[in-house]
Length: 274
Image 1: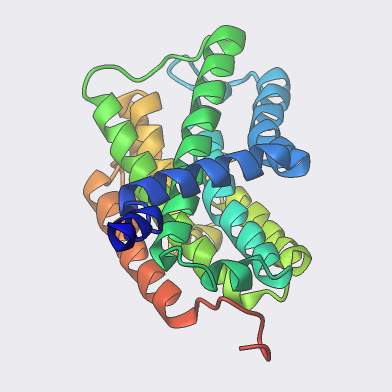
Image 2: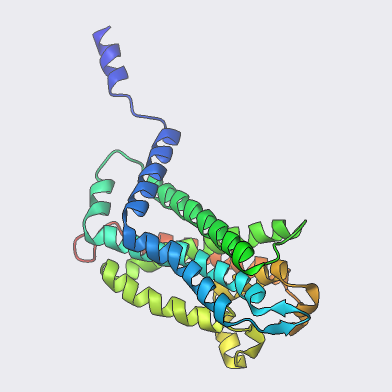
C-alpha cells in the first residue's frame, strides 16, 4: 500500500498539462517584459496611425493608401510577433542560462517549443485584432468579406508558422539577446521596405522586388492584399494576379526549410559551453 501511494505521489503530469502550463508561463513572461510588449504590440499600431494620418492619397479606383497599407502592416506585425520575437527571446534565454536549466528538468523538450508557439499565436491574434480595430474605427478600413476571411486566416497562419520557425533557427546565430536584436531588426526593417509594406510594391525597383521574393514577408503581404483590395488592383502586381497558389507554395516551402534549419542549428547552450 505504501509503495503504491509513493508512486502516485511522484507521478508526473500528463503531456497535455505540461504543454498547457508551459504555454501559460510563456505568455506571462512575455507580458511582464514591457519593452517586448511595447515593441511587438504598439509599434505596428504606431506605424498605422502615423502613415494613416500622413498618407491619405488615392492609389486608384477610390482606394486609399491606408486600405493598401493595412495588409502590409498586418504582415509586418506578424513578422515582429514571430521571427523577431523568437530570435531575440530565445537567444536571451540561451545566454542567461534559462535553456540550460530547462533542459535539466523532467519537462519534455517539446514543451518549450509548444509554449513558444502558443505565445506567438496569442500575440499574433492580439496584434491583428488591434490593427483591424484601429483601422476600422480611425480610418474606415473595409474589412474582408465572405471567403476572403478564409484566405486571410491561411495566409496569416502559414506566414506566422514560417516566420516562427525562421526565428527559432536565427536565434542560434546570435550570441545573446542584444546581438540578436541588432542582427534581426535591421534585416526586418529592410524587408518591410522592399516587400510592399510601406510603399506600393509595384513602385519598388525590380531588383528589390526580386530580392524580396526570396523571403516570406513579400508573399504574406501579397496574400493579405488580395483580401483588403479590390480585384482590379491585382493587375498592379508583378504577375498581374494575386498568385495565391504561389503564395501558399512559397510560404509552405519556407515552413519546411525553417523546420529543417531548426533541427540542424538549435542549441540549448551557448557555443563553447555544450
